[in-house]
Image (cartoon, rainbow, N blue to C red; front, side):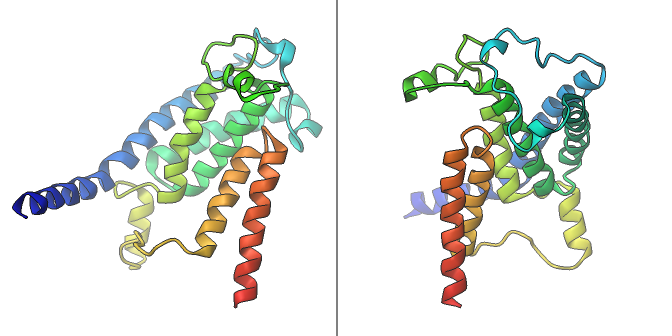
Amino acid sequence: MNVLNGYDSTTRRLRTAGEYIWPLGLRLILFWEFWEAGITKLRGENWFGEIPWAGWQKGFPFPFDVLPTDINWFMATWAEILFSIALLLGLFTRFAAVSLIVITMVATAAVHWPAEWDSLEALWEGYVITAKGAGNYKLPLLFLIMLLPLLFHGGGRISLDRVLVLMSQRGDPQDRAAIDTAGTAMVFTVLGLATVWVEPIWGGVLFAVAAALGLKLTVSR
């Protein structure tokens, strides 16, 4: 029993410390990655359209494909710069995270996702950093996975978001309640938002599940 109590005590302290550490670590590394990408674009180092795998490049997905490339480039540049600063400060972290998820997945659809694939094996060939003729979505996928915890969890205890919450006297923002139907619907909505740009059918299915859960919640009320 003493061993179990010691284990529980240790894990409780690690979990509490983690509320300070892991969100800050994610925010710092993602700040640098997106800041560097935005500043590179701002300096005019536009590699879009000059990449070695441009032969199978899909182009911007709808609705961005109706906008001029320069407009898309301008929006991506400043969004990466401004939202990376927001991540650094932990200010409006969830909004910054979901915005960068959209930017990342639009870029993935336009540049990194294979234009055609006929099997999971063929799709898996694109899970690389260096292009091999079948996509190279490994890095943006890693960014997506790193952004998801910030979207669902927030900026953590070392963030301006937490300062704003404490100033509003709303108490600890960490809700320990179990996930409910509305929360599950939100999860499927986020996954659909992250998927629809690269594979519209997948995203549509996820959105449909979210809508069904939302309808169920509405009817139950």
